[in-house]
Length: 261
Image 1 (cartoon, rainbow, N blue to C red):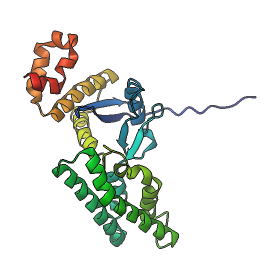
Image 2: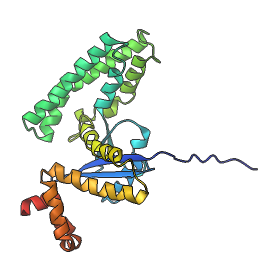
Image 3: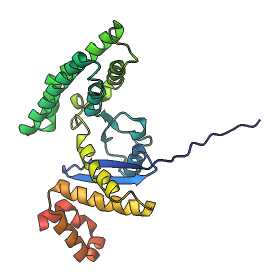
Image 4: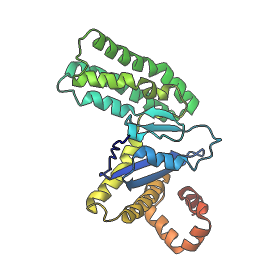
């Protein structure tokens, strides 16, 4: 018997980003620009992780290409993306969408309270369970009733937003179930602007090697920026002491540099 195999070639170039938070609450920002998807980038990073450690929390949007396939993680989906599904149809369903946006705004205000009060992860989780989870349940019930009663057409823009929310409800409420789970992916979205701006100003990249070099440099800049150090001075030090950097790179991580400077 004979058969045909359909190989689908990738033609796009993607920039993926990850913010990895260490046990010491330090943040490492990593970028990759190539034909690979974000989930594959995450797989390549987590493959180097000690598998005896507990599975990490992964915050992303619900695109299948963002999910790792080789390493087990606790998935947490971005509520900013879920909210955007509703916001994008505001002009067509103003009353209904304003209800959802108003409810979501309360949840973000609760999250802001946890930051202002500098809550521990345990206290933050309890705060969201008490205040945010009932609102998430309310939104889910509201949307389900609309679809059940046919007061919203399921294939309309609002119907699709409701189905997105309901389909991913478990992952969207991770911040109410798992210590350390974020509410949204806004921190990484903000970091990706570095790469977008650089791609635009550089008229993209000529080669994969050039893109990789740019990824490394931008990753260091973003990580140093998250550590709150002067990036210009930091790069000058790395250049002056490059032999020591290659011999003991861990001593020159941005937060170690900050302590020793």
